[in-house]
Image 1: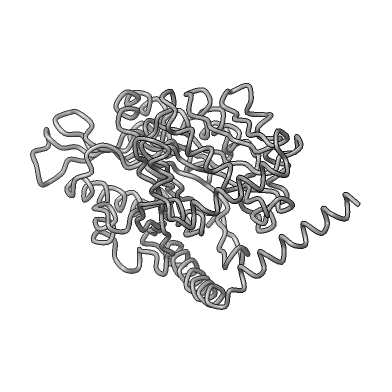
Image 2: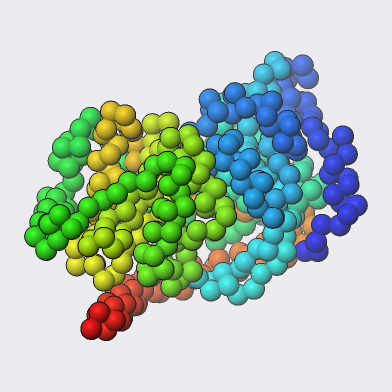
Length: 419
């Protein structure tokens, strides 16, 4: 777990490492080749096929390059590509990082360690995702770890029933695989032709609650309630400034998660805006920002990324109102989407609006070394403890009680300031 040495960086920059490849033994060498791209120049050569294959803004090439330039922990690309008859057939998009890796129980960091790791992006397995391609990619990744190019590999979100997940499980032994990793519900909406059709698909209770809060908000604020949508690159700074005023008051911020206007987040919003995909909706009450929902439309899918509301206005359910506005926008012919993806998490509002779900989770793989073994032991142990604690907390209802208590405290402080 020591920092990258000068000689290590020199080795990685040598020509023989820049496009290391091998031929599959299952086919003639001139038909199948697996290559690892380790330079930005090599990535640009695949720009056209990358953009045609990609369906997730988190794996978009423009976003990849933008974040690579602003992240201090970025070392180089690590993109595994399978070529067939000289043409790219699939790719796994990742990068080599040298970063401080936290080991957490709940939201508390127990300790952290400097680690060289391969980090594979959400939605970054592109092209033909066949069983054979998955096997070839998994084998190459294993060889990269065996060569000690990194101490571990992390997939941030991987469908546990996917061909790639099965190939990784088969290729890596028990000592090289992480254990007790959390599994999350990934929820999204398959949108019908009209917004009225979407509303009709909600439960009667959900429709009733939505109408009740809309009427309450309209009755008490009237024209003093409005939603403003930020979509352009020159609005990113203002959007971040406005949203931060709300985000700083949320329970997510109290847990050190949620929206934070750091360099990478701002760059992500700018990239989305430049491609016409930024959707930042803010609800204003008496010209005061009270709730926000930020997402990115990428091709035909809207990806929700950040949501929050000021607890002072919780009785109006402002988060749900601004979420519904964002969904309604997806039916605008100029911004038509067929899916509305709310990502990880089994929150009540997601269960209320989503009609599709699957189980995703991170996957951790480790180099066959003492350092890799230690990392696996520590992370698996913290995951086991974290999972047990979360189960107890969920059964007791303590987390929900703590959230409500925190929101009451925030409202009282707000009332005190007004008085």
